[in-house]
Structure formats: C-alpha cells, structure tokens
Length: 293
Length: 263
Image (tube, rainbow over all chains, first blue to last red):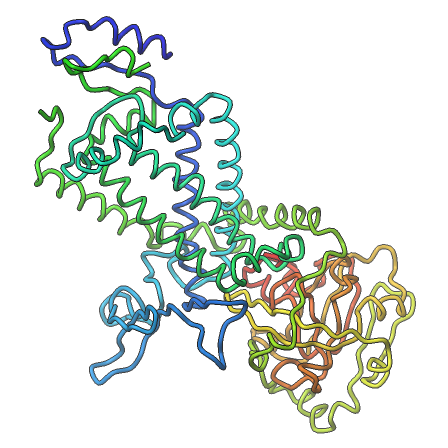
C-alpha cells in the first residue's frame, strides 16, 4: 500500500503548477479497529463511571475515606439555601455553585440531588449495580484492545515509524504550537509533534494509569499486588487519580474533536475509517517523495 | 502561505455542533436494554465471571489482603446498610445480650451445628487490621477479631457436593409482597476457607457493636462490603443459587449487583 502512495506522489512532478493532492494509505487496519474499539469502550466507561462516582461523590487522599477527619479534596453535593436547593462542587475546599449540572439537576420542577446529571450517566437513573456491570465489561474490552494495539503496532512498525519521538520533533515543536494556535494544518503522512505527544500520552500514560488505578481499587487485586496501593498513595488516592485521568481523557477527547473539525473532518474521518488520507500538494521547497515515504 | 484555512465562524459552528453531540449522548438510550434479564445485560454480565476466574487464577486460594497497623485506625468503622434492625426476634436477642442467640450451621454438612457465642469465642481466633471497601467507593480501616470460618466448616464437615456458603441474617433489608426480606448472601468455598475470612465478634478491641452487625458478622477481606453480611444467625452449605432468594446468589445480586465482589 505504501508503494502505491509513493508512486502516486512521485507521479506529480509539476508540484508548483497544480493543486493536486495525494491520497495515501495512512492508517493500518489495526490502528483503525483499535481506535473505534477504544472510542466505544471509553464512551461506555465514562458514562457508567460517572454513575459509579455518583454513589460516593467525594474524592479523598490516602488509604481510607475520612469520616472523622478531613482528607476530602473534591466533592459534589446539594444544600438547602434561602432560595431553595442548590448544587455545589467543592475543589480543595473552594466551593462553586453548579446548580443545574453538578449536584442538583433534572427537568424543571423535578430536579433531584445527584452529582453528575442524568444525561451524563448510564443508566440515566441511579443504579450503581448496573453501572458496574457496564463498566467492567468495557474495562475488559479496553485493556484487551490496548494489548492488541501494542503488539500489532510493534509488529507493523506503527510505533517506530509514527509515534516514536525523534530529535526532529523537538526542533519542530515551537513552529508546531504556532501552527496549531493559528489552526493552520499540514496534511502529511506523519504525525506532527503535538499529535505524537497527545496520542503517546493517551496510549502510554493515561490508559495504562487508568487500568492500574482501576486494578488498585479491587480488593482482590490488592492481595495479588499489595505494593500497588503503597506506590500510588493508598486506595483512595488511587480512586482520585482514576477520576483525574478521566478528566484528562475527556479533555483529550474535546481537543481531538476540535482538531478534526478544524483540520477537515471528511479527510480525517476517511483516514480512520478506510485508512486513506489526502495529503497537501507538495510545496516548492519541499522534497515530497522523501517526506511521504 | 497556508494551504488550508478555515474561517473562525466555520470553526465555531463545527465546534458547537460537536459539543451538542456530546450533550445528547448519555440520557436514557440504554436504560431499557440494561434491566435485569434483558439479553444485552445478561451478555455484559459475563464479564463478572471472567473477572472472577482471572482473579482466582492470579490470587489463588491464600493470597492475603493487605493488613495495616494500629496507627492506621483513625476513626470508628463506618456502618452501612441496616444499622439498627427493627426485627422483633433481633430486638429480643439483643435485650438479653445475645445469651439465647445461636449460630446454626446446616445444609450440605455431615454434622449440623448450633453454636453459642461462648463456644465460638472459645475457638482459636484471628485478629486483623484490614481496610473495608464499600461498593459505593469509600474505604475504612479497622481491627476485626473473630473465629476463622474454616474452623467452623471443618467442625461441621462439609459434604463434597457443597459449592457455596450461604449466610442468613436477622435484619430486614427490604419488604416485598410476600413479606419481609432478610439480608442473605453467598461466597464460594475458596473465600470461605481463606485464612482472613472470619466470623467477627470483635471490632477495634471491643465487642462488635449493633450498627456493625452484632453479635456476629462475616469478614471476606478480598471482596467488597456487600459480600460481608451482618447479624448472622445461620450458615447453610448449598450446591447452587436455586434456593437463594431470587436465584442470583444474594440480596444485592438479586437487585442487579454482580455476585463476585472482588472488584
């Protein structure tokens, strides 16, 4: 497939004269399949996870939850005020009014006290048991997919060719940041530095950390890996990290979608569905054949 | 210079469309497929069996749950579920300081037992400082003292066809058309014979208080709190869940919680 891309690219010598773009095979079937399995499992894990959080909408630091002492660093709740019930979110002791979304939400006149609103949870009504069933099913899918991706990407060279950081990436970083800030995108076969950092960060830091902190919350896994919680700072700290990584993954998702919309959603979507990606016409001062190889 | 440019307006329109897509995503689209007994839910529930087998494979029979030090006991054990049973039988037993209380061991055993508090307390005991993890997400560290369940099972001589230990409790957890539902639950024989699985009568150096399950509760340290029934009065060896409540292995299980609570 790559030879196709190369030959097509080489077949356009009149770079300066035409607007011609090159269609290249950019994403292997393994990358595409695992991408969509992650998308599906992360969707269900997020919404069931928020439901699980609703059962105890507080986060603590340490081995246990402070009931007679205070080690709470985050809380969502509801309280009665002179103007009726209000929802609040408390971060490091600082309280914000989040009525309507966090703490107190629902259709007008039928608001209830719940941390994350009904539209953000699976099931929509309060049901911890069902949320756990959904969460752990997709936890298996997510972890298996990560292992499959790691093996496939090592074997097919995706890791080495597309994700491994190079010295060149560091040099390109400042210009890359400027380009992204200006929403100016170069459509090339290879990822730019910020893309490598974002994808590498999710696949090698956030997802593994999510799985590790998830396992650290399991009382049975604690008997298998007793050092895990000591390393993480206690089971409740592990739970807090688990939640924080969720926030980071959501942030990644939002930026990911914005970048796709800005860079050209049709082309980006085609490459992650069919594998084929349309690159920019080679610039006059570029050496297109080598760059796209 | 730039070959690809997008207008600010176009970008913001696209961005807000994407954001509203996220807003619409959750809601109640999956509610109906997730009720107990529905095909999709039953399929998803298989993951619990996989987790059970994987964790049993990794942890084996005897891997111990972490134990802590006295310094880690920073607060009273937080009670949950029923904390003051309103049942007449229980209140009668409590009024007499449980002098008339007995622990029955029955079902698939060679020698059914009826043990008083004194008999249980005269057996060898185990004391452990462990972390109680509630399914809701909180944890609390406390010191538990009790009789290893394996000693009681040995005394009763478990029949080979027995597969689970069922706990019968004195507290009413729910009411149904057919009457009061008293708490019940099951664990497998591996956890039942685990060295840290004890029938606890002591908490933090004192007799077990009512709110934490007096006179006797079970501790299953490699599982979550809902697998550790309080206010015990009967242990029954069974070969399946057919005779256990709604057939899913416990009160919370019959209400949609996974039977295996090791995760």
